[in-house]
Image (spheres, one colour):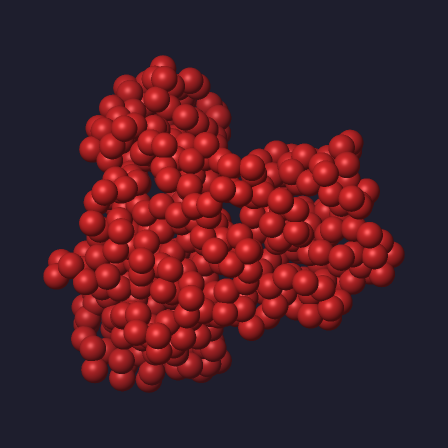
Length: 418
């Protein structure tokens, strides 16, 4: 028997063979060739893998599915593991074809399709922004006539803020209509429109094992997610103190959302929630996977447990970390993350080590001499870091100190980064 892993992203950050060392069977891996090239990695040549393979055209071709079915016949695949957003529906369909346990298509689609997601949670009494499916420009024109500006246009199954556009007024809307961006041969089946919700964006992250949350935490972005192409300063994200009433409200709302959706038994999640100026909580969306950026490292800092391997192990029925077997964990301390987006220019100098004992992880995604272009999605980073602190206020102060230090020691083109 064997387990098949579908993977896009860095393999160094996801050593499945180590995480599943006690699995009583073989481990097979299909990885995105383009992602390995992006991270400068090659397929592992040792370890516990029985079969490793890099697939070209991973995101767009049907070769992944074809190879998965071939490997399933050859190696008696009993489980399929997927942890990235774009693989969830693919893995669910393969499980249905092969009759395997785990998340099925109805569940994966409810988390991936933002129209379906909003219908389900709205029926359960959770507030969402007014929204509509877009098949042609007339749908958006009608929506604007009913709800006014600003509006948000985005793919209904998108991620990473790719394709998201905020239209603020009539002039921007006229420009959009003239550009033809709302129509492809007069039909655009994958687009949705929703009313813009003012206020702060919060998020709730966690892990469900055997149908119950075993760890959850609430955080707040101190920046706008959609501005990743133009941000030149640090983008901060801080966890909320456990006794903050807002944190308790966010956790309770997220549990309602999870209960409303056809959630699988074992999964990681990332929910985004607006807090309006009038103090209403409005669900933006929820994903059935670990959050991006350094959210995994924030969870590890908060609880002393890495949530991603726990999620992977749970998907194939292996016991989670011993710490999670006693019930829901409470944070040991607070955390915050700092990211800088790529921007056009040539890297001259970057500081390689952060001289603070409260920096839990510091990563650079570019090197001196590298020519950068504008960020292409919200995870297209120049640098990132995670800090620990006793409180939210201390986290924010440390993030600002870290930003000042980075500003002093980094340079791009012929001047400082900033």
